[in-house]
Image 1 (cartoon, rainbow, N blue to C red):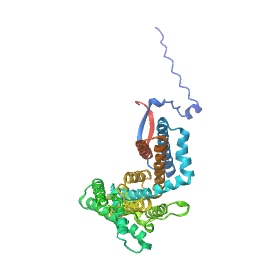
Image 2: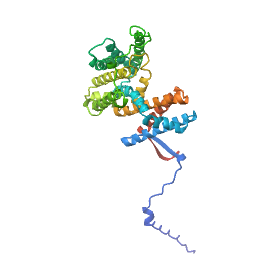
Image 3: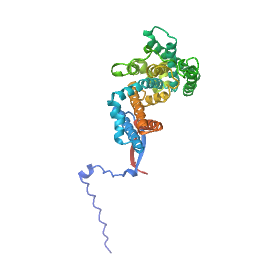
Image 4: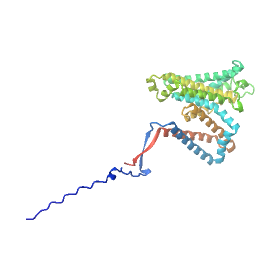
Length: 386
């Protein structure tokens, strides 16, 4: 009989070293091209980070614009000289920038006030036209004593600009008609009525050209120390008042709720209709005052194309400033600097005006792109295809 032997028992596994058990698994490096990315909304981003993203976007836009101008034949040293040195160190150029910036500040504030109430007022030029018409009517009919004539012209401009925005506001709030269409179409009505006046009853009798008679000296905005126009002082005061209204008043606080969501604001008891109506009327009044600044501060009379380009500039300023009144003032000065330097480039370097408009468009696109990165972020979530 054959003896059988039992198989050997398996030896127990050796315990893992304590150090190895406590060590976390090492993450494998995944190359950038093999990673998978996702787009997600930011919960909150502080003002310093927002300002940094916006500054980076503006820097990229300026770099692209500079490269285009250099390719067009402008030397880099000349660009720095025209846009920085000559503009802000030469007193004459600085006066020209501030002279141009005053109505831009006003029309930028007008756009910002309406946009805060989510009313897309594109009739800024028509309201400017009626503001200038109101101021000119006071001058032509010699309303009031000479000492008060300028103030009466400003008041008439405010009222006329305010009244011209009433119709699109009523159409929007009562009938639900899109304010973009109604306010934009009213620009053509105002422009053609202006031509009717300047080619008719208000034509200058001295030379029969299509512009009104010159304003008297006391009907024009005076200069202050250094030859700077007092229009920039008025624009600065209005900007401070608009900032107080937006950031410090109760109506400004309610307006933030309206901007965030009008239905929710109405549900919690915010007087949405009154706030929207007040903001829109204020927008029209400021646009009318901008027309007064151009007529009484720059032209010295009512001309047929004084308002050209201000509507787009106001929308651009409000967009770049994110409807902030103080930021709108700074952006208006920068846009005025671009206009003044662009004229120098046209005269001395034969750069066409279309290239100046291209620079504006590039800056707008860059700032619009910055808004995307302020609201979103791109995050890598792992290996591609995992």
